[in-house]
Length: 593
Image (tube, rainbow, N blue to C red; front, side, top):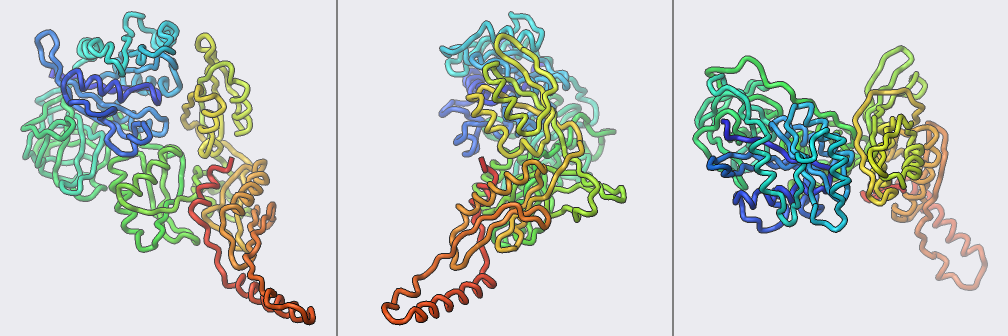
């Protein structure tokens, strides 16, 4: 056990975690690197160049004549996948904190660091990309020292591209990170930190042994669900699964026990023996708090059950996805899904399409509100369709967040304008070093879910980094904005918005839908309404056949008769015709600006 080291790599998005992981794997001869980012094995990760899933892999390293087993977990950097990071941290004793030498400390670096410090992890600071022409090693070192309070000699200069500093990192992992603590003779306690679905072998759970020993063929049970299984196969995680006879305290590995239904595996659950169970489950695992909610509906109604099965399998691999059934007048039966952010929502939609071949419609994303009625009762409302009658509502409270934005001083003006436009209140600003500043804002979550992050990036030319956590609810003046097509309300397009923004938003939505809805044989009126009051309108003109073309000469009443006949036909058609709203209209409303 004293020769085991469990550690993860944490950093801001795009600071070179996965490339550095490649170099570590290459140096320890765990795998032959055939292409970049070996641990990012999803097509989506390769295409977008981001890590979506945490990946665990075992390396062997000889140091001073002894063989050490290093379990490395590569984690995502984007704020939408911070739950993946929190789970990886729970399975480690140490972390490599990677900072880009050309960009310095950014918001996600700080929030991941705090998460690691809460779990008492040993932090090894690594300055990556030191080979780049734009690197500023001395200034970035000062920032790291300010952040961690470490010595200058503790910081390792490295480059994931050239392999510089890789040996020092491995030595630091062995010397500085403590070996796992635990008792091999105690009853078995193993923490599940991830799981995947395999169509041939059922569900494979990844775990870390905290106390005790687990062997192939043991009879085990999952503590929280109470289900009992045989451990058909246990082993360690290399690039593939490698079976072992037993895993001892401190090891990280996987278990296959023929589990078929995804509800039986909960991330954060504890595995123990049936014969000699442990007293209590392992603690320190937080429940996920979804930030953004959206309805996901199958395009074909009969795909509802398939969609449920696909979401369950996806949830195994992505524990931060939550969902519950709901129905809508316009779209039929579907699910109300909770995501950690917009990128997360986009990735889930893509994965449903690619991995499970599910074609879905996603409604406008929103957050959950607390609605207080005049009798003093309160209910949580997720989507505008669930709002009680406006006459019964006393007031509505919406979720607020504490946001921190780190940027260069050149961009403070535009960023403050953006935050004010999103109803943000400046709490304070701290100058970190040189020309970098950290702004603290209190903002409504509903304002940032759609396009805040994209705008922030474009205003600051990519130099601002953003991180947030929820800070409770506050009363606010919200109204429900409905979109009507020919007087019929479209369920999926209605939104809850602040009273001050409603008129502008309604007008822009109508203009956008006018461009996107194809013309029909009859006229279509697109209206935005608050309650019974119409606040904006656009009209899509009918496609008309020239019925008077065959009339030439003669009395004008002949032409008039034909036009009257056409007018009656159009009127009848308008009563029975339905308007199809294309999927891209739903998506375009999200990206209105």
